[in-house]
Image (cartoon, rainbow, N blue to C red; front, side, top):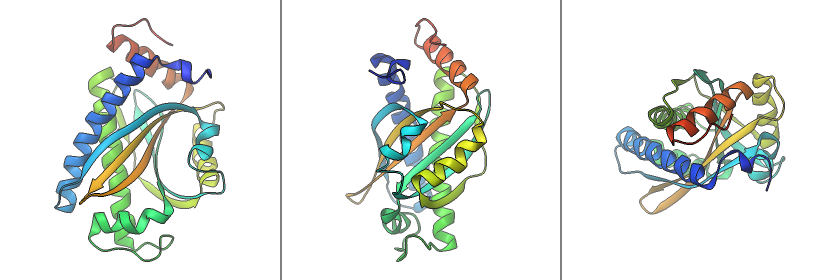
Length: 212
């Protein structure tokens, strides 16, 4: 088992998945109100990855992806990333704005805004659920959308952390609308000091000895 996998016990991972499902429920409600129809969301998987493994997790360094990313402020510092397969952008855009975009790499301004808003809703819901659990105030900044190779996006975003050996908390999220399913991946990459603070607060909230 890798050092990253040992950061959280199975019990803690289950608790983190439950936090994710709470956040997904709130995000689904907000998203349903945004698009005027029912959208169901659930968390299918939670795991811990070293940042250097994210591109491989997404299908390889040369895989084209769409990513909404935003800085995280407050009592923890870091970056949030939400990845979607670029070939699913027309379907995702259709779910959000009611019309399917034909060219994934050339979304309309309305389609881009809707996907950034989706990223903002997801991130806000997950951070809010985390706050209720660990009582650390977390705020996200303005979302930015990038469509590029996975590694190129990661390289540009990870420069913001100015550290090596970053760890990512991954929450795989499934969206279901009229029996059509889409999957996105939410990544929370805390800075090193913030990761220690998160682990300590998370363990305390579960009545466990601190990890950090």
